[in-house]
Image (cartoon, rainbow, N blue to C red; front, side):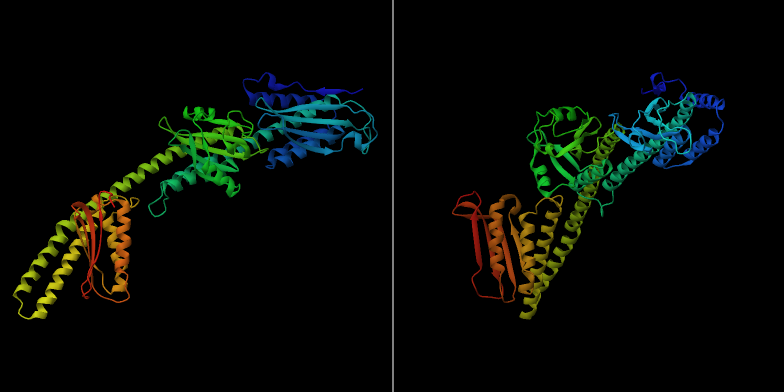
Amino acid sequence: MRCVLKSPDPAAEPPPDAAADLAERTARNLRALAGGPVSRLPELLEAMTAVGTDHDLRRALARIAETAASLTGASHATVGIRSAYGDGAGGLITHGEPPDRAGRPSPATSLEVPITFHGEVFGSLALTGKRGPGAHGAPDGRPFTEEDLHLVRVLATEAGIAMGNARMHAAARQRTRWIDGAASVTTALLAGPETRSTTEDALTVVAEKGRELAEAATGAVLLPHPEGGMEVVAISTELTEAVRAEAYRGRIPPESPVLHQIHAGLAVFADDFATDPRSVSPLSRHYGPTMLLPLRSNGRVLGALALCRMSGGRRFSPSERTLGTQFAAQAALALVLADRHRDRERLAVYEDRDRIARDLHDLVIQRLFATGMLLESARRKAVLPEVRERLGQAVDELDATIQDIRTAIIALQQGPSQVPPGLRTRVLREAGAAAAALGARPAVRFAGPVDARVDDATGRELLSALREALATDRPGRAEVVVDAAATLGGRPAVRLTVSRTDSPDEPFVWERPLDGAP
C-alpha cells in the first residue's frame, strides 16, 4: 500500500504579511521538531545556514535534497523546479536513487511538500523510499513520520527563500541589462558627427541591440511601406544571407491582423509564430517565440521592432515581454531625437553654406573683378606687345576664376550632399579631371540657366561629349563654354564648345535641342 503525506498548499490563501507568515511557519515547524529526537536539529540548522549563505542556487538546492534524505532516512530526494513561465516545465535536482533501482522492488511511501515564497509556488521537495534501521538500511515500505514532515517543511521553506532570492536577483540583472542596452542605443544614435551613422545605420543599431538583449535569432525594424503595410528596412540575424534577402524583399500586407494591433500601439506576442493564425508573413515559417513591438513616440507609431527566436526556442517570459516593450518605446524616442538632432545639424550646415556663398559673392568676386579692371586698364596702356599679351592672359584667368567661384556659389546653394550635383558642378569636375593631361585647368564659362534648362539625359550626353573633347595626349590650354541660351534651327538648345587656345584646329562643337526633339 502506498502512503503519501502532502503539506497543505499555503499559496491557496496568501497571508497579508508574507514575511511574518514565513517566519511563523518556520518557527512552528521547529517547535514541533523540538519535541522529537534532537539529534537531527544540529544538522538541520547547519544546512539552513549553509543554504542561506550560498549564492549558487543549484548547489544550495542540492544541499537541501541531500539534507532532507539524510535526516528522514529517504533513499531518494528530489527538488522539482517549476518553470518561470508557468507552463509546468522546469528542472529536477535529485539525491540518491529511486527505490525501484536502489533495492528490493517493494512499494515505497512518499512525502511531498510545496516550495513557496511570498505565496508563489516555485516547485516541490519530494522524498521516497524510507530506509530501515541502520546506516545502510534498504527501503522497507515504512511511512514517513510527522516529525519528518515538519523537518521537510523547514527545508522547503529554505529552498523557497533561495529560489525567490535567485529569481529576484536574476530579474534585477535582466532589468539592468535591458536598461543599459536602451541607454547604449540612445548614445549611439545621438553620437557626434564623426561617429554617428545614417538613418539606415541607426535602425540597424536598434535591430542589433534588440536581438542581443532578447537573446533572439533575428531582430528587425519594420517601417510603413509606400503602398501600405510594412517592410523590413534593417535586420540583424544569425540566419543565412538568403533569409536576409528574403526579409528585405518581403512585405507584411496592410490586411494583416498583426499590423492592426501594431498600428493601435499594441505589442504582439506569439509562442510559435510559424503556426500563429495572425501571421501572414512568409518569414514566419522560420520562427517560434516572437515579439512584435510598436516603435511608438508621442502617440504616433513609427514602425515595429520584431524579435524572433527559432522554432522550439525558449518562450519569452512575462518580464522579457515587459522589458522588450519598454526598450522599443525608448528606441523610438531615441530615433525621433536623433532625427531632430540631424535636422538641427543640417540647418547649421545650410546656414554656413549660405554665409560662405554670400562672402564669396560680396567680397571675393568683387575684389577679383576690381583687379581684372585694373589689369585691363594696364593692358590698354602697355607699349610692348608681349606685355599686352601677358596682361590679357591674366585678365582671362581672372574671368575664368570668377566664373568658377560663381559656379561654386550655386553648388553651395543646392542643398545637402545627398542631392545629386547640378550640371555646372559636373562640368567643372570633368574639366578638373582633364587638368593633369592638359598641363593646366581648362577655363570654363557658362551662359544661361544651365542647371534649370538642361534635363538629366541631355546633361549626361553633354558630359560624355566634354570628356571626349578634353581627352588628349598633348598638353595645352583649353576653353570650355556651355551655353544653355543657344538656339538650333530656331528652337532652344544647349551648345558645348571646346577650344584649344594653343592649336589652330577648329573648336569642338556639340549641341542638342532642349525640347526633347532629335
